[in-house]
Length: 165
Image (cartoon, rainbow, N blue to C red; front, side):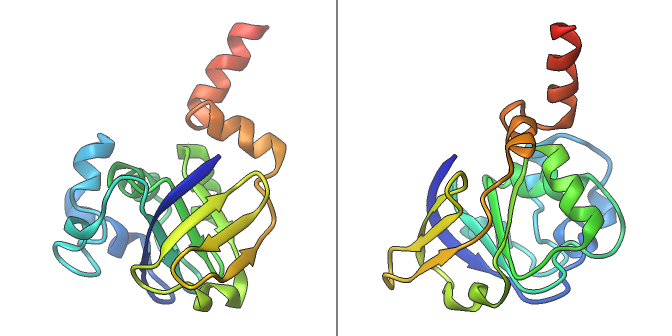
């Protein structure tokens, strides 16, 4: 998968309630959730996001409550990829299960600037900052996780597998 978009940076320990506050959990519609993405961090944050932009986060992104609404809100905001120093374990799995690509880059996340134009190749594990010329390498998305992503998430993957058997 290749993605090209602007970087939107957030800090460390961004929890799922910052990503999508509990008061908006009355739906599972990704677009509706996306319209409130990061509302718990900064009201109106999502208005600066365009389709295929990239979220760049610090450490422990997605900590807090285990809710699949959080990755759905990010996807619904038009963000297909999150690049972070590290992820909360449950969010990491929920993200892939919902079809959200998550790349872990450690301290290299600090080299990606707010508003920088990024080009990401998830199969190669390469993030190019077109604004600065900087390149960041990370572990590519493993094959079995790519299959889940290609199916649109775990539900689509399971449905596809059931049809094959």
